[in-house]
Amino acid sequence: RLSPRQLCRSVERSLVPAAFNGQPSAAAVGGWARASASLVPLRPSSFRESQEQVALSERQEAFVLERLPRDWDEEDICRCLHGAGLDLGDKPRQRVLLMRTRLGVSIGRAMVKVRDHVPHVNQAFPDGTIYRPVDIHDIEAFVEQCERLLRLSDDLRRLARPENLFRVVTITEVPENYGRRDVASVVEKHCGVTVDPRDIVFRFKRWGRQSDTCYVLCPTEQAADHCVAQIQELAVPKRAAYGTLFGAAFLWSSRATLFMSHPDLDFLLQDSKFWIFTTGWQEDMTVEEFLLLMNQMSFFPRKAVRHPIQADSSSAFFMQFDSMFWTKHAMRRLRRLKWRWRMRQSITFFAYPRRIDIHRAHEDRYDDEDSAADSDIDEP
Image (cartoon, rainbow, N blue to C red):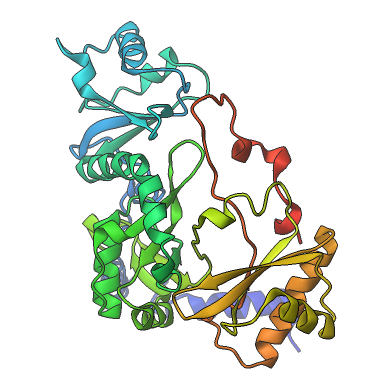
C-alpha cells in the first residue's frame, strides 16, 4: 500500500515523458508541437463579444443611449452631446432616433449615428444612462424595434381576433438582437411553416428593450401544433448575421399565452386577481350547468361567466374565487384533471387571465411599472 507521497511520485513519473531528462528530446518536442497546433487559440475579444458587447472595431456604426429621462426629446440629447464635445453637424436631429410609444412619449432609448467610439459622452447625461456601441445589424434591429413598439397595439388586436385564439405560439429565450425576419426564417427552416413577418409580435421590457419572448401567429392550428413539437430546445445562433461566431441560444415554444378581445370582457376582471379561465367545454353548456359540474368536482367558485369560443365551437368560462389561496388550489386541481383526462400537453385547458397593460396619455406613472402592485400568483 503506497503512502500519499509515494502515490504522488508515481503519478508524477507517469505524466513525465520517458525521454525527458531535464531537456526534452526532439521527438518529444515534435509531439508537443503537434498537440499544441491542434488547439484553436481563443481571441482576446471573443469573450467580451459573446457577452453582447461590441468591441471597438470597424464594425461600429452608431451608439445607443438607454435609460434616458422620459421627458427628453432630440434637442435635449443633442445639447448634452454638444456639451460633451461631440459635434453632430449642421442638422443634429437627423442623426438621433428616439424610440417613442403610440402616444408620442419617449421610452428612454435613443440611437445616435456616429461611427466614433465616444464612451466619455455618457458623463454628460444623468446618472444611470447606459452607453452601448452597435454595428450595422444592431442598427437595423433598433429601427425595427421602434416600428414594432409604435404598432404594438394593432399587432395585439390582430392576435386577439376570435379565429386566431389557438393559432398563436409562444417562443421564449429568443436572442435580443433577433428581428421578425430572423424568427420567420427559423420557423420556416426547422418547421417548414411559412409565417408572415408581420404576424410575429415581440414583448418589450420597461425601458424599451426587446424581451426574449415573441408570439407567432401560424397559418393554421395544425401548423401551430407542429411548431410547438419542433421548437423544443432548438439551437440557433445568438447573432443571426454572424452565424456560429457568437455561440448558440436554445429556443422553446408552447401554448403559454392566449389573446382574447371582446367588449363583454373589457370590465370583467376589474381589480380582482382571483380569476381562472378554462376552455374546451361543450358549446351549449350554460353557466348553471357549469357551476353544478364544478361543485360536484369540489370546485366552489364565487361566480362564473360564459364566453363562446369561435375557433373550435366550444364554451369557455371565467371563474372567480374568494381568495388567492383558493385560486391556486383550483389551478392545481385543474392541472391534475388535465393529466387524468389524458389531454395533450399542447392543449390549453386553463389559464390565468390578465388584462394587457394600458398606458393613457394623462398618466405620469403606470400601474404595470409599480412592483408593489404585482400579483402573488407568481410566488411559489
